[in-house]
Length: 387
Ligand SMILES: Cc1cc2nc3c(=O)[nH]c(=O)nc-3n(C[C@H](O)[C@H](O)[C@H](O)COP(=O)(O)O)c2cc1C
Image (tube, rainbow, N blue to C red; front, side, top):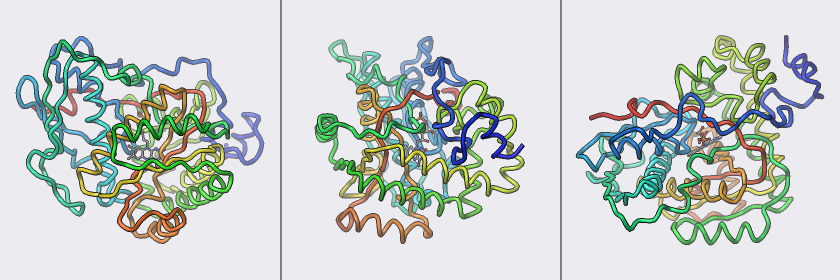
């Protein structure tokens, strides 16, 4: 069965793609179940492990879960980048991997507050390293302190609800009030600048660029291989690896998901010839970006390791806050990536939006409204912890 037959089988016209949420529609299945994982482990005795069982729910690039935690003493642990879980072809300077360290730390901090602990974060206790290297030094030491007076962070209740929602959205821009609320929210706790792009002109321009950026991304064997390696073609792979992402995160469920996974998604085929996978990714990006009417940029003045970690914290909070506001959020990072083939288009994008020389657009994401999606999988807490 080819792709056209598949589309016909499901009763949709040309232009729809296997991954498109225009095609997948809504589902009556429960969407909040934590895939391959029972949820934060409240039965754990050790407060550090309890906190970590929430922290691994953090958003992170390709759901690599690039974290190693070393337990130090009964109330502290060090966080390291897992050098076996990088994305060298698409994230050559590990900038996004460090953003994913910040999201972990922020989720840990918020979780600790909900469990009655204050989490002190000491960044790079053995010193930072340059953007051109990755050293075996901790990104942070987290020290927990029990505190009867601590009140849970208001975002604690969003930790199990947050996800990156890759469905198509409703083509309606955020209201001015929503944008102001998020600006204020970001300004209260982050040095970064949050910029919204919500005009029809921006919408057209950004969806064109993001689609072209995906086209560039899939035009290279190493980059394709990196994504395909994290794409889970069926539930058996999800259960086996407990990382990565699949069609469920774009909203596909039920019989449509089963058909897609049975007839269209073959690891062997994708690895042998990634062309179709690449075309699907481009079609999906076009559909996702055209369905969104509001895009947001998070920009920093500096771009050292610590800035990358801190923007990860700010991005994580933003995703939790939009969850609290009933909004869907989805990073679309290709145009920001630093590999050589992307740089000419990136330069045009930065110039068009008057991004000051030396500033870094750390995150680009779309915002809107959509049905929730199934959570992506997470590994067991023990698999990231070293004593
Ligand atoms: C730095 C960073 C970059 C990301 N870039 C993309 C992206 O380009 N496209 C995408 O679909 N998701 C992107 N994501 C979202 C991740 O795929 C998502 O966080 C991960 O799969 C875990 O899923 P969850 O956020 O729903 O828990 C990015 C996340 C982070 C933290």
